[in-house]
Amino acid sequence: MPDTSDTLPAQHNLHSEFFKDIYSNPRYAQDLLHLALSGNTQFDLDQLIPGKNANIDPNTGAEGSCDLNFSVRIKDHPDCQEDFGAIFKHATGNAPEAVGQLHRYSRHEMGYHDRIVTAILVMQTKRPVEIDESGIDPKLASMLPAGVIDRLRPLVIKFPIKSVNFPKLSDEQLQGADIITSPCLLSMKHIWNLNTEVVAKILRACHSLPSGDRKNLSAKLISYLGRADGRYDRKTLFAIEADCFPNLAPEERLLAKIEFGFDEARLEGLEQGRKQGIEQGLDRGREQEREDVIVSMLKHGELKDSAICQITNITKEQLAEIKARAIRH
Image (cartoon, rainbow, N blue to C red; front, side):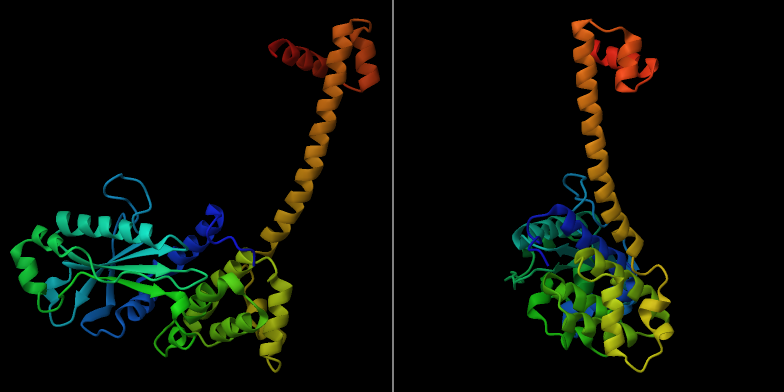
């Protein structure tokens, strides 16, 4: 795959859109929290409550401060459910900037909404990134009402920035028994260097999904793979899946079942659009060249309008338009 993760905004948007599309679902966001919190059991991750305006920078009002926002219930402390939150920031590069954004949003949440938050940085990078997890400035605690601190102090000693740092995680960690979105996590880890072996592992993970999630997640995932790396079109993925499951009837394979899962028409449309764009460009070039010749004829004044129309194969109306453009310029 081309080395574009740090340079092309459009490519970054592709990865961020996929991340938010999948993990805005509280049921799936539990997977990221499990990874970030390293098995911490004090939070009731089955009761995530989506927040609002998650990606609005509180200082500027612009988008980009964080990507996802959830209220988290704390086991045995139901009165704290609205006072603790988890916010996610997805990044394909520039970890310090992403950490700064999380600090700002955490300060906003703590100062204006009387809640403590855990900020989680999801790093989808080609190489491991060292992230400072020492925590948000403890002075921020002074912004919170004493009652909130008293209720949460036994549970939250610091206000850390946690991370899901994909290059540092093993495939086994991303395929735990309780992780529903393992094929998505595998894809996010390996997207910069996909190969047949990795894609085969991703497709096997898709087949192992619970039936209720298999088609929905697989459809989004297969589309993502195709958009992120043009080598993996529907035909190629179908061949890899056939190798993975040689005894499975063709009509039972994911690629056959997902009617609109892989946006093959979109990719074909891009290629057709590219060719049409070239042809249209050539047509426009030829039209411009013809118009330049007509303007030259008009300037010399040696030919009547009817003769110009006959020679250049245009109508009187088209000639009038060309005259008007020539006058404006």
